[in-house]
Length: 457
Image (tube, rainbow, N blue to C red; front, side, top):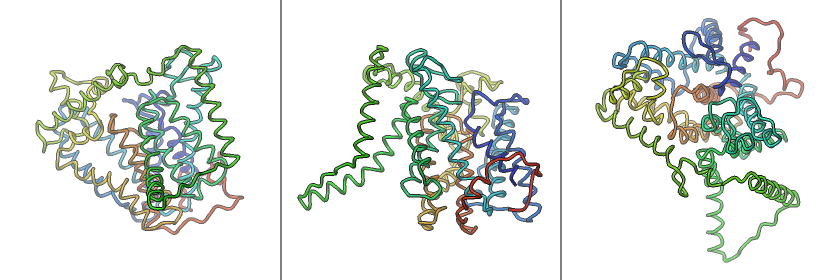
């Protein structure tokens, strides 16, 4: 099991890699996808040994949606593309269930969740390196975009661009923030305090408008209720309580103000116009090219769905059908990328039809709001805190995907996996005991000789 744990850990740490660790094996494959083949083999070994298949909540809806895609496969338009996408979907779903077989009743669940959280911290740390090093005249590898060429970088880490980075990073940011607020044992300590700060900084300095938007939504949810209750208390009692910060709070405020002042001086030195942060939105007189393109693609995808609302085009046929409506014949993956369904939920709608999309929506509910409701039933058990954080992260992920494309993002399906896994473990497995100090690092990868699969937990 140690080797399997190592392999899946590599999958988690590389799930956001777009610009590295890609292989051409008759098609483009990420390292995480290649390694998931071995995870599936290990899961088969577990199923054969135990003589049973673990079936988490939401798996039936997901399986039914895969059947819907099979039914509509003949309507893909181009058989080779349709089969390729359907095969990828089946492999992805099998990978989700494979991880549940391996960890669904294992006491390795806590090390796995901690490893999952650490994968976001590691990517955020590299993203901050990308932001900081150009300030000293050094451009970190894989940096994709600058606001000021060679001086003021936008964080993208190992993703194609900042918007992709943020769509990945929002999962880790929401989880760590929620776990810290709920005082979950898994994120106790000074390291996780600084990890939360690093994740927040990486989100902010990506300068993605989507990131700033969801961060404002999270702040509104966190502080909106307490502020309203405070104002209501003032209205009823007529007493105003003034919060006096501690000396540590004052020091932190002074440091933040100093950093903000230094940053403004640096931007002034670069003759940087802050209005460029709004580029593409149409706000403050800026160009609206990005907004116009997204709205146009969204309307086109929805109109394609309205052509025959009950008929799905399959996950591989959406781009083919959209291109066909514009008189273009799609034959390659490069052309498919030009006509992705947009946003993701419209892509799924066009692929499935009005009735066929229902199982997917049930699955989506199960892994978001449903997960949070289940966590409430088991609160304040430690795993319930994990599940609520993951459910909230899924909700925010789909807020970002409402303005983005491509359902087959590896990290999205890994998050589906973790939600299903933790929910199953919470419902059917005994609570894991806190790791003793001498064993806390036992889950880390080692190079000891071990079989691919060991049934011993």
